[in-house]
Amino acid sequence: MDYLARNYLRSRKIPSTACSGCGLGQCHKAMVQAIHELGYKVEDIIWATSIGCAGRQTYATWKGDSFAGTHGRVYAIARGLRVVLPPEKRIVMTVGDGDAFGIGFNHLLHCARTNCDMTIMVCDNLGYQSTGGQYGWTTPPGVVTDSSPYGMFEPNWVQKDQDVLMILKAAGATFLARHVSTDGRAMVETVKKALQNRGFSLIHVIYPCTTNFANTALGSREPAKIYRWIKDHAAPLGQEKPDTLWSTGIYYDASNSRPEFSQVVREKVAEIQRRYANEGTH
Image (cartoon, rainbow, N blue to C red; front, side, top):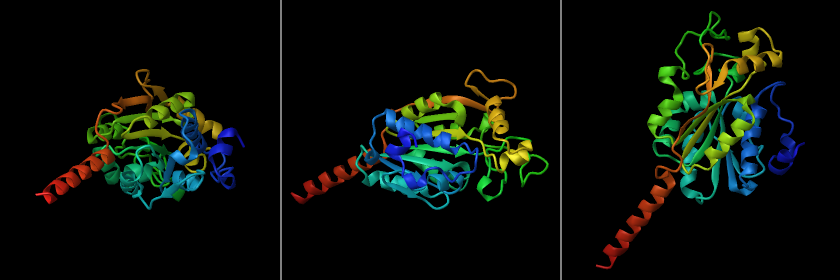
């Protein structure tokens, strides 16, 4: 067990119950590494999880306070929690692509709209892998899955003219980024910036599923094959190639530029209380 696991994670949850070769550990380690390097303590962080692989493998792993939401509802819970928590407490989430960009998308948009202070890592294994490997909101065009045996043909949320990150920007998000799980140090630095934004931050991370996606899309469960495939189809923003599926890096950084939701609520409540007190004196 390394120093991050010893200091921040529950020993009974180590090692993870994820499939052999799963990239979720890379996603989670980047989040914990960023927390560590920024000097946060266990009690400073409230860690939320959702449904699916990303939620199941992370639930109750954090040594401190944590909670989980039912399908797509964790964002609404977090938004309410943000109002009652002290401002210095940080809410982080590790959620799945189906939960964030599918059933929970409406709640996610309202968190962005109000610039609610939370840092969300969307751990994307390119489909519904925990239920058998059906295609999802970000499955690349042409990819064979259990529910697209002739290749994925629907538009997805990573296309140039309908990128989900740009939709979230238009909704009011103040920090948005995309990485693949093998980005290592670059991803840690991005998460650190996201955590320092007092507002809505989201990092979309593509990670490999060796059990379902790799088997149907690439014809092999060999981890090296899917890791190489993802790496070959990713490139930093501005360095894309014709076959690039994921441009990596910070898409939008307007950190601390808009009023944060819970701050606005507290200020409004204080204003109402002052008005009531003044009216009571007349």
